[in-house]
Image 1 (cartoon, rainbow, N blue to C red):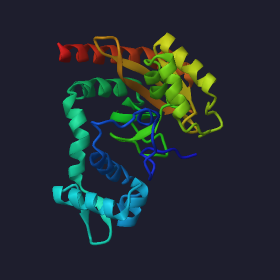
Image 2 (cartoon, rainbow, N blue to C red):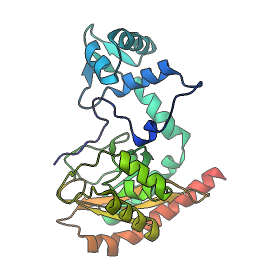
Image 3 (tube, one colour):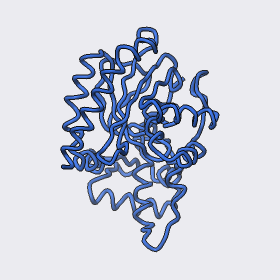
Length: 275
């Protein structure tokens, strides 16, 4: 069963954004502009004015003003009917990566890990009820979906997601899980909140997390936290493979030590960066 690797065509309100109540400092026009940008996705790479308005929850007139502003700034182009984003939009995403030099330092560590375990490796951060990929070093295609920097997956059924939830207070993790769209993506997917909280608590206790065929049939993944000087998890690192060649036993016995060593090294580099 296919899973999503990018935002839904019509952006959903996450548990994080749902808790925010606009105040005097809230700039509604800016927020609407971001909704227009987020309305574009792999499922909707080009859109008409009416489609943008519908997906962003705006009037046609409001969507038109925002699209024309984005066009003037070079973030959108149009043929007169269809609109699409331009490569300049990547500046917004890469501003995050460039503001955190740790990822430049982390890439060689991830590449060494992939060379050692012969499986793909990814890093992700938590954003509401989703994880967002900030770096990926693949070996070969192991999923039916394409993953890259900026791809999003549900936190509740991914190893990195549960590892990131494990850093939160229990009540906050419970709130995010309650706000998640808990769907049985496979016959193995856990969607009971109490059972999920137990898995998150287990990840918190042991310092790593293993998820088997919950995101996609045949996929197995193990994650560990990347911790800053304050002891807080800023991202998670995973190793993923196919259960037909990499069993849970093999992953724990032969790959977990390498994964933990990699996260310790990346955490050390993060401390040096801050120092």
